[in-house]
Image (cartoon, rainbow, N blue to C red; front, side, top):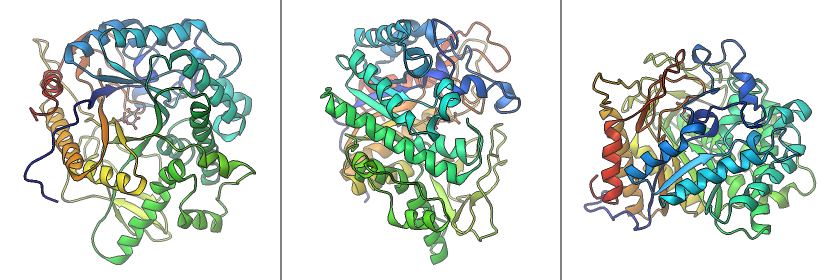
Length: 479
Ligand code: BG6
Protein backbone atom coordinates (compact mmCIF):
# COMPACT_ATOMS: atom_id res chain seq x y z
CA UNK A 1 0.00 0.00 0.00
CA UNK A 2 1.35 3.38 -0.88
CA UNK A 3 -0.29 6.05 1.28
CA UNK A 4 -0.61 9.59 -0.02
CA UNK A 5 -1.37 10.82 3.48
CA UNK A 6 -0.45 9.21 6.79
CA UNK A 7 -2.86 8.99 9.73
CA UNK A 8 -1.69 10.93 12.78
CA UNK A 9 -0.32 9.04 15.79
CA UNK A 10 -3.10 8.33 18.33
CA UNK A 11 -3.54 11.15 20.89
CA UNK A 12 -2.43 9.00 23.84
CA UNK A 13 0.48 7.39 21.97
CA UNK A 14 3.18 6.39 24.45
CA UNK A 15 6.42 7.96 23.23
CA UNK A 16 9.12 6.43 25.36
CA UNK A 17 12.49 4.89 25.85
CA UNK A 18 13.77 1.74 27.55
CA UNK A 19 16.56 0.15 29.57
CA UNK A 20 17.29 -2.99 31.58
CA UNK A 21 18.48 -3.26 35.18
CA UNK A 22 21.80 -4.99 34.58
CA UNK A 23 22.69 -2.64 31.77
CA UNK A 24 22.18 0.61 33.66
CA UNK A 25 21.98 0.20 37.42
CA UNK A 26 25.39 -0.88 38.66
CA UNK A 27 25.38 -1.24 42.48
CA UNK A 28 25.64 -4.95 41.76
CA UNK A 29 26.22 -5.95 45.38
CA UNK A 30 24.69 -3.09 47.33
CA UNK A 31 21.74 -2.84 49.70
CA UNK A 32 21.20 -6.57 50.00
CA UNK A 33 21.14 -7.43 46.30
CA UNK A 34 21.92 -11.09 45.52
CA UNK A 35 24.05 -12.29 42.60
CA UNK A 36 22.50 -12.90 39.21
CA UNK A 37 23.82 -15.27 36.57
CA UNK A 38 25.23 -12.25 34.74
CA UNK A 39 27.18 -11.14 37.82
CA UNK A 40 29.00 -14.46 37.57
CA UNK A 41 29.14 -14.85 33.79
CA UNK A 42 30.95 -11.56 33.15
CA UNK A 43 33.80 -12.74 35.38
CA UNK A 44 34.57 -15.72 33.13
CA UNK A 45 37.50 -14.69 30.88
CA UNK A 46 36.72 -13.80 27.24
CA UNK A 47 32.96 -13.88 27.57
CA UNK A 48 32.30 -10.16 27.09
CA UNK A 49 33.93 -7.38 25.08
CA UNK A 50 37.17 -6.41 26.85
CA UNK A 51 35.84 -8.15 29.95
CA UNK A 52 33.22 -5.43 30.46
CA UNK A 53 30.62 -5.87 33.19
CA UNK A 54 27.67 -4.15 34.82
CA UNK A 55 29.21 -3.73 38.29
CA UNK A 56 28.87 0.03 37.95
CA UNK A 57 27.23 0.24 34.52
CA UNK A 58 26.04 3.87 34.21
CA UNK A 59 25.27 4.07 37.92
CA UNK A 60 21.55 4.63 37.36
CA UNK A 61 20.99 3.13 40.83
CA UNK A 62 22.45 6.28 42.37
CA UNK A 63 21.60 8.72 39.58
CA UNK A 64 18.03 7.78 38.69
CA UNK A 65 16.72 11.18 39.78
CA UNK A 66 19.14 12.96 37.47
CA UNK A 67 18.24 10.57 34.62
CA UNK A 68 14.50 10.93 35.18
CA UNK A 69 14.82 14.72 35.27
CA UNK A 70 16.39 14.46 31.80
CA UNK A 71 13.51 12.22 30.68
CA UNK A 72 11.08 14.87 31.89
CA UNK A 73 13.01 17.58 30.09
CA UNK A 74 12.74 15.55 26.88
CA UNK A 75 9.02 15.06 27.48
CA UNK A 76 9.00 11.25 27.60
CA UNK A 77 5.51 9.86 28.08
CA UNK A 78 6.76 6.47 29.20
CA UNK A 79 9.89 4.78 30.45
CA UNK A 80 10.39 1.04 30.28
CA UNK A 81 12.81 -0.43 32.81
CA UNK A 82 13.37 -3.86 34.29
CA UNK A 83 13.46 -4.97 37.88
CA UNK A 84 16.43 -6.98 39.10
CA UNK A 85 14.91 -10.11 40.63
CA UNK A 86 17.93 -10.34 42.96
CA UNK A 87 17.23 -6.93 44.50
CA UNK A 88 13.77 -8.08 45.52
CA UNK A 89 14.66 -11.67 46.41
CA UNK A 90 18.45 -12.03 46.77
CA UNK A 91 18.19 -15.82 46.55
CA UNK A 92 15.42 -15.79 43.98
CA UNK A 93 12.91 -17.01 46.57
CA UNK A 94 12.31 -16.76 50.28
CA UNK A 95 13.08 -13.60 52.20
CA UNK A 96 12.13 -10.25 50.60
CA UNK A 97 14.76 -7.50 50.59
CA UNK A 98 12.84 -4.36 51.57
CA UNK A 99 15.59 -2.06 50.27
CA UNK A 100 15.14 -3.53 46.80
CA UNK A 101 11.38 -3.00 46.89
CA UNK A 102 11.92 0.56 48.10
CA UNK A 103 14.37 1.36 45.30
CA UNK A 104 11.86 0.55 42.56
CA UNK A 105 9.05 2.21 44.49
CA UNK A 106 11.10 5.42 44.61
CA UNK A 107 11.92 5.10 40.93
CA UNK A 108 8.24 4.66 40.01
CA UNK A 109 7.25 7.64 42.17
CA UNK A 110 9.93 9.78 40.60
CA UNK A 111 8.57 8.93 37.12
CA UNK A 112 5.00 9.64 38.18
CA UNK A 113 6.06 12.97 39.64
CA UNK A 114 6.71 14.07 36.04
CA UNK A 115 3.73 12.24 34.55
CA UNK A 116 5.92 9.54 32.96
CA UNK A 117 4.12 6.19 32.67
CA UNK A 118 6.28 3.33 34.00
CA UNK A 119 6.45 0.13 31.93
CA UNK A 120 7.93 -2.57 34.13
CA UNK A 121 9.79 -5.58 32.74
CA UNK A 122 9.73 -8.46 35.21
CA UNK A 123 12.63 -10.32 33.68
CA UNK A 124 15.42 -8.98 31.50
CA UNK A 125 17.87 -11.91 31.69
CA UNK A 126 19.33 -11.51 35.19
CA UNK A 127 18.22 -14.79 36.75
CA UNK A 128 19.20 -15.21 40.41
CA UNK A 129 22.41 -17.26 40.56
CA UNK A 130 21.03 -19.04 43.63
CA UNK A 131 18.28 -20.58 41.47
CA UNK A 132 20.80 -21.61 38.83
CA UNK A 133 22.86 -23.29 41.55
CA UNK A 134 19.88 -24.86 43.32
CA UNK A 135 18.12 -26.45 40.38
CA UNK A 136 19.55 -25.28 37.05
CA UNK A 137 17.37 -22.17 36.64
CA UNK A 138 15.24 -22.34 33.51
CA UNK A 139 15.93 -26.06 33.21
CA UNK A 140 13.77 -26.96 36.19
CA UNK A 141 10.03 -26.63 36.54
CA UNK A 142 10.63 -25.23 40.01
CA UNK A 143 11.39 -21.90 38.37
CA UNK A 144 7.75 -21.57 37.28
CA UNK A 145 6.56 -21.18 40.85
CA UNK A 146 9.50 -19.03 41.89
CA UNK A 147 9.06 -16.66 38.97
CA UNK A 148 5.34 -16.45 39.67
CA UNK A 149 5.87 -15.70 43.37
CA UNK A 150 8.39 -13.00 42.49
CA UNK A 151 5.98 -11.46 39.96
CA UNK A 152 3.15 -11.47 42.50
CA UNK A 153 5.33 -9.55 44.96
CA UNK A 154 5.79 -6.89 42.27
CA UNK A 155 2.12 -6.83 41.28
CA UNK A 156 1.15 -6.42 44.95
CA UNK A 157 3.73 -3.70 45.54
CA UNK A 158 3.35 -1.60 42.41
CA UNK A 159 0.14 -2.30 40.50
CA UNK A 160 -1.49 0.69 42.20
CA UNK A 161 0.94 2.79 40.12
CA UNK A 162 1.99 0.60 37.16
CA UNK A 163 -0.32 -0.01 34.21
CA UNK A 164 1.99 -1.87 31.82
CA UNK A 165 3.99 -5.00 32.57
CA UNK A 166 6.36 -6.93 30.33
CA UNK A 167 6.67 -10.54 31.47
CA UNK A 168 9.77 -11.99 29.75
CA UNK A 169 12.15 -9.92 27.64
CA UNK A 170 13.17 -11.69 24.44
CA UNK A 171 12.75 -15.28 25.48
CA UNK A 172 13.86 -16.25 21.97
CA UNK A 173 17.16 -14.41 22.46
CA UNK A 174 18.05 -15.54 25.96
CA UNK A 175 17.19 -19.15 25.10
CA UNK A 176 19.17 -19.27 21.86
CA UNK A 177 22.16 -17.42 23.27
CA UNK A 178 22.06 -19.33 26.54
CA UNK A 179 21.51 -22.87 25.28
CA UNK A 180 22.46 -22.96 21.60
CA UNK A 181 25.22 -20.46 21.03
CA UNK A 182 26.73 -20.51 24.54
CA UNK A 183 27.16 -16.75 24.45
CA UNK A 184 24.89 -15.99 27.44
CA UNK A 185 24.64 -17.87 30.72
CA UNK A 186 24.43 -20.79 31.26
CA UNK A 187 26.59 -20.97 28.11
CA UNK A 188 25.41 -24.34 26.86
CA UNK A 189 25.33 -25.74 23.32
CA UNK A 190 22.58 -28.32 23.42
CA UNK A 191 19.38 -27.94 21.39
CA UNK A 192 17.55 -30.56 23.42
CA UNK A 193 18.21 -28.66 26.61
CA UNK A 194 17.24 -25.44 24.88
CA UNK A 195 13.81 -26.69 23.79
CA UNK A 196 13.21 -28.19 27.23
CA UNK A 197 14.20 -24.98 29.06
CA UNK A 198 12.26 -22.90 26.56
CA UNK A 199 9.10 -24.91 27.26
CA UNK A 200 9.56 -24.23 30.96
CA UNK A 201 10.01 -20.52 30.23
CA UNK A 202 6.78 -20.62 28.21
CA UNK A 203 5.00 -22.15 31.20
CA UNK A 204 6.52 -19.56 33.55
CA UNK A 205 5.43 -16.75 31.25
CA UNK A 206 1.89 -18.13 31.09
CA UNK A 207 1.81 -18.74 34.84
CA UNK A 208 2.72 -15.11 35.57
CA UNK A 209 0.08 -13.79 33.17
CA UNK A 210 -2.47 -16.15 34.71
CA UNK A 211 -1.52 -14.91 38.20
CA UNK A 212 -2.00 -11.34 36.98
CA UNK A 213 -5.50 -12.21 35.75
CA UNK A 214 -6.41 -14.29 38.82
CA UNK A 215 -5.29 -11.47 41.09
CA UNK A 216 -7.49 -9.06 39.13
CA UNK A 217 -4.70 -6.52 39.01
CA UNK A 218 -5.49 -3.50 36.86
CA UNK A 219 -3.38 -2.86 33.75
CA UNK A 220 -2.00 -4.82 30.84
CA UNK A 221 0.66 -7.51 30.55
CA UNK A 222 2.53 -9.15 27.67
CA UNK A 223 5.94 -10.55 26.70
CA UNK A 224 8.48 -8.73 24.52
CA UNK A 225 9.55 -10.69 21.49
CA UNK A 226 12.74 -10.01 19.51
CA UNK A 227 11.22 -9.75 16.08
CA UNK A 228 13.32 -10.04 12.94
CA UNK A 229 11.02 -10.51 9.97
CA UNK A 230 12.33 -13.10 7.55
CA UNK A 231 12.58 -12.34 3.83
CA UNK A 232 13.38 -14.97 1.19
CA UNK A 233 16.58 -14.01 -0.62
CA UNK A 234 14.78 -14.56 -3.93
CA UNK A 235 11.78 -16.40 -5.38
CA UNK A 236 13.57 -19.71 -5.81
CA UNK A 237 11.13 -22.10 -4.07
CA UNK A 238 13.84 -23.75 -1.91
CA UNK A 239 14.68 -20.33 -0.49
CA UNK A 240 11.02 -19.64 0.16
CA UNK A 241 10.68 -22.97 2.00
CA UNK A 242 13.79 -22.08 4.04
CA UNK A 243 12.06 -18.82 4.97
CA UNK A 244 8.96 -20.74 6.06
CA UNK A 245 11.26 -22.91 8.20
CA UNK A 246 12.68 -19.79 9.79
CA UNK A 247 9.19 -18.43 10.44
CA UNK A 248 7.76 -21.59 11.98
CA UNK A 249 10.80 -22.57 14.00
CA UNK A 250 12.08 -19.18 15.06
CA UNK A 251 9.25 -16.67 15.02
CA UNK A 252 5.81 -18.28 15.20
CA UNK A 253 7.46 -20.81 17.47
CA UNK A 254 7.33 -18.30 20.33
CA UNK A 255 4.50 -15.98 19.54
CA UNK A 256 1.99 -18.79 18.70
CA UNK A 257 2.60 -20.20 22.16
CA UNK A 258 2.09 -16.82 23.81
CA UNK A 259 -1.18 -16.14 22.03
CA UNK A 260 -2.68 -19.53 21.14
CA UNK A 261 -0.98 -21.71 23.75
CA UNK A 262 0.36 -24.12 21.11
CA UNK A 263 3.50 -24.62 19.04
CA UNK A 264 3.30 -24.46 15.22
CA UNK A 265 2.61 -28.02 13.96
CA UNK A 266 5.48 -28.06 11.47
CA UNK A 267 7.96 -27.01 14.15
CA UNK A 268 6.75 -29.62 16.62
CA UNK A 269 6.88 -32.42 14.04
CA UNK A 270 10.40 -31.43 13.09
CA UNK A 271 11.55 -31.32 16.70
CA UNK A 272 9.92 -34.69 17.44
CA UNK A 273 11.66 -36.26 14.43
CA UNK A 274 15.00 -35.06 15.78
CA UNK A 275 14.31 -36.10 19.36
CA UNK A 276 14.15 -32.46 20.49
CA UNK A 277 10.46 -31.92 21.19
CA UNK A 278 9.58 -30.45 24.60
CA UNK A 279 7.86 -32.84 26.97
CA UNK A 280 4.29 -31.90 27.82
CA UNK A 281 3.08 -32.83 31.28
CA UNK A 282 -0.54 -32.91 32.43
CA UNK A 283 -1.83 -29.38 32.76
CA UNK A 284 0.73 -27.75 30.47
CA UNK A 285 -1.67 -27.22 27.62
CA UNK A 286 -4.27 -25.59 29.86
CA UNK A 287 -1.70 -23.35 31.50
CA UNK A 288 -0.28 -22.19 28.16
CA UNK A 289 -3.78 -21.38 26.95
CA UNK A 290 -4.49 -19.41 30.12
CA UNK A 291 -1.52 -17.13 29.47
CA UNK A 292 -2.82 -15.06 26.58
CA UNK A 293 -1.25 -11.58 26.74
CA UNK A 294 -3.03 -8.23 26.44
CA UNK A 295 -0.49 -6.95 23.94
CA UNK A 296 2.52 -8.18 22.03
CA UNK A 297 5.71 -6.42 23.00
CA UNK A 298 8.00 -6.05 20.01
CA UNK A 299 11.72 -5.38 20.08
CA UNK A 300 12.79 -4.57 16.55
CA UNK A 301 16.28 -3.85 15.30
CA UNK A 302 16.66 -5.54 11.94
CA UNK A 303 15.22 -7.90 9.34
CA UNK A 304 16.80 -11.15 8.20
CA UNK A 305 17.22 -12.50 4.72
CA UNK A 306 17.03 -16.22 4.31
CA UNK A 307 18.32 -18.87 1.90
CA UNK A 308 18.31 -22.66 1.95
CA UNK A 309 21.08 -24.40 3.87
CA UNK A 310 22.27 -27.94 3.03
CA UNK A 311 22.43 -30.66 5.69
CA UNK A 312 26.15 -30.11 6.03
CA UNK A 313 25.73 -26.33 5.88
CA UNK A 314 26.51 -23.53 8.31
CA UNK A 315 25.49 -23.73 11.97
CA UNK A 316 24.43 -21.25 14.64
CA UNK A 317 27.70 -20.46 16.37
CA UNK A 318 28.17 -17.95 19.13
CA UNK A 319 30.50 -16.03 16.86
CA UNK A 320 29.29 -12.67 15.69
CA UNK A 321 30.48 -9.15 15.19
CA UNK A 322 30.95 -7.92 18.76
CA UNK A 323 33.73 -5.49 17.85
CA UNK A 324 31.97 -2.99 15.59
CA UNK A 325 34.30 -3.90 12.70
CA UNK A 326 31.95 -3.78 9.75
CA UNK A 327 31.79 -6.88 7.56
CA UNK A 328 33.06 -9.38 10.15
CA UNK A 329 29.78 -11.27 10.57
CA UNK A 330 29.89 -14.81 9.21
CA UNK A 331 26.95 -16.71 7.73
CA UNK A 332 25.00 -18.67 10.32
CA UNK A 333 22.01 -20.97 10.17
CA UNK A 334 20.47 -24.33 10.92
CA UNK A 335 21.71 -27.13 8.65
CA UNK A 336 18.94 -28.54 6.47
CA UNK A 337 16.67 -25.70 7.46
CA UNK A 338 17.81 -22.18 6.58
CA UNK A 339 20.71 -19.77 6.71
CA UNK A 340 20.89 -16.01 7.17
CA UNK A 341 22.45 -14.23 4.21
CA UNK A 342 23.25 -10.64 3.31
CA UNK A 343 20.52 -8.44 1.83
CA UNK A 344 21.98 -6.44 -1.07
CA UNK A 345 19.27 -3.78 -0.75
CA UNK A 346 20.00 -2.78 2.83
CA UNK A 347 22.64 -0.68 4.55
CA UNK A 348 24.18 -2.14 7.72
CA UNK A 349 25.37 -0.75 11.02
CA UNK A 350 28.99 -1.09 12.14
CA UNK A 351 27.91 -4.28 13.90
CA UNK A 352 26.45 -5.61 10.61
CA UNK A 353 22.81 -5.26 11.65
CA UNK A 354 20.61 -4.39 8.68
CA UNK A 355 18.97 -0.96 8.73
CA UNK A 356 15.45 -1.65 7.54
CA UNK A 357 12.57 0.57 8.65
CA UNK A 358 10.19 -1.22 6.27
CA UNK A 359 11.00 -4.37 8.24
CA UNK A 360 9.36 -2.77 11.25
CA UNK A 361 6.20 -2.03 9.30
CA UNK A 362 6.24 -5.59 7.97
CA UNK A 363 6.68 -6.95 11.52
CA UNK A 364 3.79 -4.90 12.84
CA UNK A 365 1.58 -6.00 9.96
CA UNK A 366 2.46 -9.69 10.32
CA UNK A 367 1.94 -9.72 14.08
CA UNK A 368 -1.30 -7.78 13.87
CA UNK A 369 -2.71 -10.09 11.17
CA UNK A 370 -1.68 -13.32 12.84
CA UNK A 371 -2.51 -12.46 16.45
CA UNK A 372 -4.97 -9.58 16.36
CA UNK A 373 -3.42 -7.96 19.45
CA UNK A 374 -2.36 -4.38 20.09
CA UNK A 375 1.40 -3.96 19.84
CA UNK A 376 3.72 -2.13 22.18
CA UNK A 377 7.11 -1.47 20.60
CA UNK A 378 9.35 -2.05 23.58
CA UNK A 379 12.74 -1.55 21.88
CA UNK A 380 14.15 -0.06 18.69
CA UNK A 381 17.36 1.84 18.15
CA UNK A 382 20.78 2.20 16.60
CA UNK A 383 23.95 0.97 18.25
CA UNK A 384 26.78 3.21 17.10
CA UNK A 385 30.15 4.67 18.02
CA UNK A 386 29.40 8.21 19.18
CA UNK A 387 31.95 10.97 19.61
CA UNK A 388 31.89 13.37 22.52
CA UNK A 389 33.19 16.65 21.09
CA UNK A 390 35.38 19.01 23.10
CA UNK A 391 32.40 21.33 23.58
CA UNK A 392 30.30 18.55 25.12
CA UNK A 393 28.16 17.96 22.04
CA UNK A 394 27.42 14.63 20.40
CA UNK A 395 26.29 14.84 16.78
CA UNK A 396 24.52 11.52 16.32
CA UNK A 397 22.84 12.17 12.98
CA UNK A 398 22.88 8.45 12.00
CA UNK A 399 20.73 7.74 15.10
CA UNK A 400 18.30 10.52 14.20
CA UNK A 401 18.02 9.12 10.67
CA UNK A 402 17.49 5.61 12.00
CA UNK A 403 14.83 6.62 14.52
CA UNK A 404 13.06 8.98 12.14
CA UNK A 405 12.66 6.39 9.40
CA UNK A 406 11.46 3.82 11.92
CA UNK A 407 8.91 6.25 13.39
CA UNK A 408 7.61 6.90 9.89
CA UNK A 409 7.36 3.14 9.32
CA UNK A 410 5.25 2.89 12.48
CA UNK A 411 3.02 5.68 11.21
CA UNK A 412 2.61 3.79 7.94
CA UNK A 413 1.66 0.65 9.87
CA UNK A 414 -0.86 2.66 11.88
CA UNK A 415 -2.25 4.00 8.62
CA UNK A 416 -2.40 0.41 7.34
CA UNK A 417 -4.62 -0.42 10.33
CA UNK A 418 -2.26 -1.79 13.00
CA UNK A 419 -3.00 -0.84 16.61
CA UNK A 420 0.27 0.43 18.14
CA UNK A 421 0.14 1.50 21.79
CA UNK A 422 3.54 3.10 22.02
CA UNK A 423 7.16 3.20 21.02
CA UNK A 424 10.15 2.81 23.31
CA UNK A 425 13.52 3.57 21.81
CA UNK A 426 16.54 1.65 22.99
CA UNK A 427 17.86 3.37 25.02
CA UNK A 428 17.50 6.55 27.07
CA UNK A 429 21.04 6.86 28.41
CA UNK A 430 23.97 4.95 26.98
CA UNK A 431 24.33 1.66 28.77
CA UNK A 432 26.23 -1.62 28.84
CA UNK A 433 25.70 -3.78 25.78
CA UNK A 434 25.80 -7.35 27.13
CA UNK A 435 28.47 -8.60 24.73
CA UNK A 436 29.68 -5.36 23.13
CA UNK A 437 30.85 -3.36 26.12
CA UNK A 438 30.28 0.39 26.36
CA UNK A 439 31.45 1.39 22.89
CA UNK A 440 28.19 0.34 21.21
CA UNK A 441 26.00 3.24 22.25
CA UNK A 442 22.24 3.57 21.91
CA UNK A 443 21.20 6.49 24.12
CA UNK A 444 19.82 9.99 23.69
CA UNK A 445 22.12 10.81 26.58
CA UNK A 446 25.83 10.12 26.28
CA UNK A 447 27.43 8.69 29.40
CA UNK A 448 31.13 9.39 29.59
CA UNK A 449 32.77 6.09 30.44
CA UNK A 450 34.36 3.19 28.58
CA UNK A 451 35.24 -0.43 29.28
CA UNK A 452 38.35 0.35 31.26
CA UNK A 453 37.58 3.70 32.84
CA UNK A 454 34.39 4.70 34.63
CA UNK A 455 35.49 8.34 34.69
CA UNK A 456 32.81 10.51 36.27
CA UNK A 457 29.91 9.02 34.35
CA UNK A 458 28.85 12.48 33.33
CA UNK A 459 25.72 12.82 31.18
CA UNK A 460 25.63 14.81 27.91
CA UNK A 461 22.57 15.35 25.72
CA UNK A 462 23.14 14.18 22.15
CA UNK A 463 21.55 15.87 19.11
CA UNK A 464 18.99 13.04 19.04
CA UNK A 465 17.80 14.16 22.50
CA UNK A 466 16.41 17.40 21.10
CA UNK A 467 15.18 15.78 17.93
CA UNK A 468 13.03 13.25 19.89
CA UNK A 469 11.82 16.01 22.23
CA UNK A 470 10.29 17.73 19.18
CA UNK A 471 8.79 14.50 17.89
CA UNK A 472 7.09 13.95 21.24
CA UNK A 473 5.96 17.54 21.61
CA UNK A 474 4.28 17.46 18.18
CA UNK A 475 3.00 13.88 18.62
CA UNK A 476 4.95 12.85 15.54
CA UNK A 477 3.91 15.76 13.32
CA UNK A 478 7.51 17.01 13.12
CA UNK A 479 8.75 13.77 11.56
C1 BG6 B 1 17.93 -6.49 22.85
C2 BG6 B 1 17.99 -6.53 24.36
O1 BG6 B 1 18.19 -7.76 22.40
O2 BG6 B 1 18.84 -5.71 22.17
C3 BG6 B 1 18.79 -5.41 24.98
O3 BG6 B 1 16.72 -6.62 24.91
C4 BG6 B 1 20.04 -5.17 24.15
O4 BG6 B 1 19.05 -5.74 26.32
C5 BG6 B 1 19.59 -4.69 22.79
O5 BG6 B 1 20.95 -4.30 24.71
C6 BG6 B 1 20.72 -4.31 21.85
O6 BG6 B 1 21.58 -5.37 21.68
P1 BG6 B 1 23.14 -5.17 21.76
O7 BG6 B 1 23.70 -6.54 21.61
O8 BG6 B 1 23.50 -4.28 20.64
O9 BG6 B 1 23.38 -4.57 23.10
